[in-house]
Image (tube, rainbow, N blue to C red; front, side, top):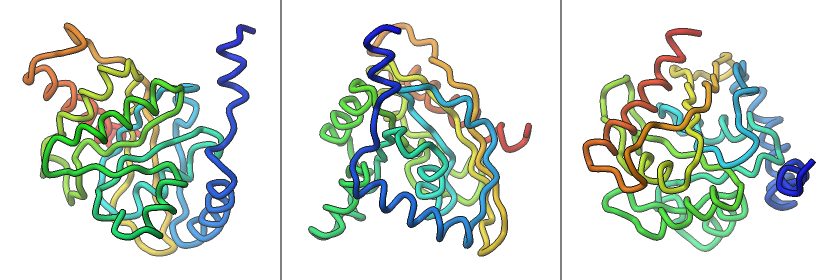
Length: 209
C-alpha cells in the first residue's frame, strides 16, 4: 500500500465536535426524516465534488449524514447562515464555509479548491438555492469552475422532494465522473455546459432509480 493511499484510508473526522453533532443529529433525523440511501458505494475515497439538486432546507443536513463520519465533507453554504459569531463558529467546525451567491466570491472558490486539493470532499448545490421543480433555475457555473480547477470527480446526487415529517425519502449517489474539458480554463459556454450536465445527471437519478 503506498503512503498516499494509506493516509487517505486513515483520515479522521473533521473534529470531535463534528462527530458529536453528526451522531446526535442522525438520531433526530432518522426519526423525523428517514432516508433510503442508494449508491453510497459510488462515492470516491477522496477529492469528490458532491452535486445534489436542492429543494429543501433539510438537503445539506440529510446528505451530510448519509456519508461516513470520517468522509471529511465540507459544505459551501450561503453567507446569510453565518449571521453571528456563534453560528459562524458552529458552522465552520462542521466543515461549512460561506459563499456570496450574488457575485463571484473568490474567497469561497479558494476555500473550495483548498478542501478538495487537500483530499477532502465538497458538497455544493449547482442550482445555488432551493427550487421546487427541475428546470426552475439553470446550474451556476461556479460548480464547473471548482471541479475543473481542482481536478475533482463530480458525483451527481438526487435528493427526493416533498419531504414530510416521518415520511421516508431517498438520496441517490450517482456514478462519479470527470467532465471533458478542453483546458483548466474553459470558455464560459463550456463552463455552463459542464454545470448543466451534472445537474441533469442528478435529476435523472430520480427518474431512473
